[in-house]
Image (cartoon, rainbow, N blue to C red):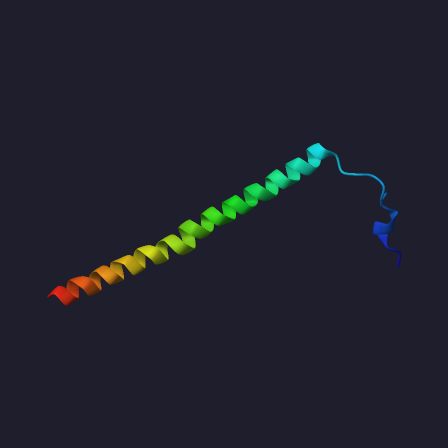
Amino acid sequence: MKNSFKKILTNHEVPKVLKNKILDDIGMIRLTFDIADIFLMKYPGTISDYYISQEMVNSAKK
């Protein structure tokens, strides 16, 4: 079986515009992932921890 990747020209570079566009897309994907992580994973856990601690404080006062 022949390696198809050896047929690719190795002395050519990717245009800077294309390279920047790909890096921008990767940055946007990372940003979207980080925002989703904050609001879907960390924020609900923080809210529930806060309410649980408030319930403990309120029950200790009674």
